[in-house]
Length: 495
Ligand code: UDP
Image (tube, rainbow, N blue to C red; front, top):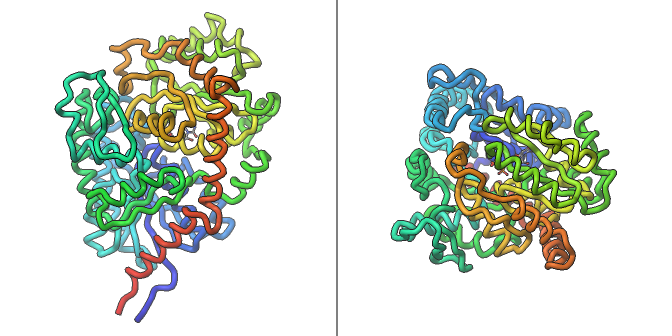
């Protein structure tokens, strides 16, 4: 019997921050466990994580990054647009997926030249062709779908039961059947594949994604068992993964031991001037006093909704960091910030970050008191790692399921009362959906010791402790990586 000594994994992330960041972290975790890692992506996506990987390589980790040109012009996409979050409009999503499809052939060529021969492909669920490539080259494929087991279970239940199809009302809650908890949701809050909104595209890809998941050897999940044990079991049962493996290996944002250390000590280090500035600013506030508001990498609010959020933060009378993503007519909103005197009024107390914020670093600071989030799963987990209560404002995709998990199951947050899925631009039609009072009320609920705020915070802190234990040596996520590697090694034994 001949076993291969060292494993070699090829990692293919999907090009959107919420998919790229966690899969790169998973790649780094595997490299730390002595797996040779080849990450395949496009040049502009590589730039997003270059500096981290360069440091890993310098410190001796076996990682390489290979770049494939993204076929923008063949797919009629603007130059420089290599990720979902840089798409000028959602209507170009089709072109984007077409461009991604065109990467198959150059990938195959590259794969054949890789040495040593790869033993496994870990690909995002949206990289549909990786199924065929894996079977063509006879290597197992592990899928990363970016969801929690809870959200995965909700989606599976809807897919199988089709219960939503017999619900007439958009706003009347109905029960998602067959789950360990009684979860009620409305049709207006369902994720893309089940929501007959303007984006039929999601419905089409959903079928293909399910097929692709069914063809996988297993699923790697950014979560930890102690967080959602019942739903991990549920995922292992579902046909989607029947007979397949589900490895929870997170929270993967804890992928550096020294990050863990820093988070525990509250001894954070900046890696550039901006970060330095943010940390100093946070140092000037008392423990657990600052609200951090960031709605992820994809959400774009229309100016009147941005204004309402700003006023909600102002009226909370607390210090806050507000991450402002350029939205629709963002010039109009910028004008409001200045002309209406908002920036002046909140000066000192409100820190506005335009563009990209170092979210994990900020959340780890002891001055952060609560996180106003759109409930993207990565943000949710990052909030959990920081042990802060969440103020939830879901918008689209599986974010409403995540909100149920946060508010109803883990009880570590309070919702602002968002009612429906809003894709970028839809708000033009719907107008201001969340009012300033709803925002301040939810903030008060998690921040005030009375009002259950203290209990919510204690639960959040307890979960953060459990998260840290899960990733440390001997913890459930650590052990799951060991099991995953053993499984793949066993597959590699050749008679
Ligand atoms: N993120 C960040 N800075 C920002 C916005 C987002 O670092 O200004 C990171 C965040 O920490 C998370 C990811 O981007 O890791 C967003 O993923 P999530 O699943 O929360 O939401 P999405 O952006 O996919 O909707």
